Length: 311
Image 1 (cartoon, helix red, strand yellow):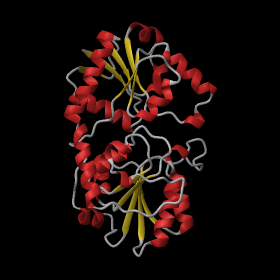
Image 2 (cartoon, rainbow, N blue to C red):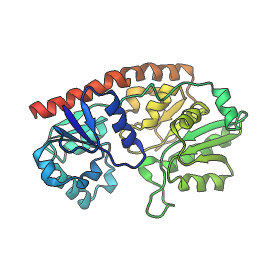
Image 3 (cartoon, one colour):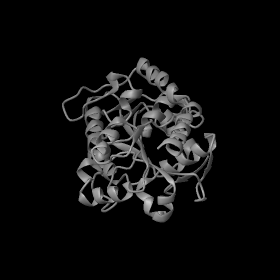
Image 4 (cartoon, rainbow, N blue to C red):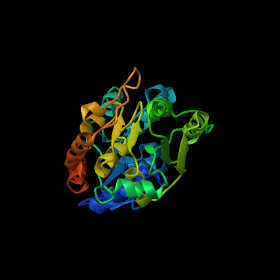
């Protein structure tokens, strides 16, 4: 089978994910040859880049990573339904996304989580990595995702929970006997940076580090905090599990598939500060073994074969 994988070319997650699929899939995967058996809209929001006439002639599977309920207005619904005319089946990474779009479409929806690339994310020495960033004597809390709306570069991207992250860091800092240092990477971190500066909390920001650098940053982390309200993943849960980075998360996306229950935090109510111990880290590492890339990509291959032959 020849699969055309449509990626956004944004130098972000979907581009990497498409390339990983190309490398490990048993199918022939292309990013530019539209003369393929099946189209995978990995970046569904870019679907208009493809001629609708071509979409109507091919089997099409569209990945919906997540939808933000308070942003899903009539315009967003109209866009979804227009694309839906060309889609034969949907792929979603988590049950929350499946529940949301099941109310909108009558097309088949198949849930398969993201895979974990154990060739990329590695467990390294924490002390050595902390020394690299000059934070050996600090308690390092990390966040590696966008947190600010692109429209004004100051408003919080609420689905990512940057307000919750900042509230947590402030609370932790006020109750810790160690100095807190925040490690940030990713585009559009203006909101978090402005709040950290208002608290007088030290931070380091690396906008677009390469993957080796990100691996080092995970391994320099004492606690990774996911405060998101809506996610398909997030990828940080997979990456923390593989790098054995202590992590707490709200109940979003695949969090409960990977993390121990004690690491799931309700940030809408009062909560106790919790630092996962080695038992939690090891449990997450064991759970992530179920979705390692070589075996998990096979599920995507079989999904595409099913869409082509049966749907």
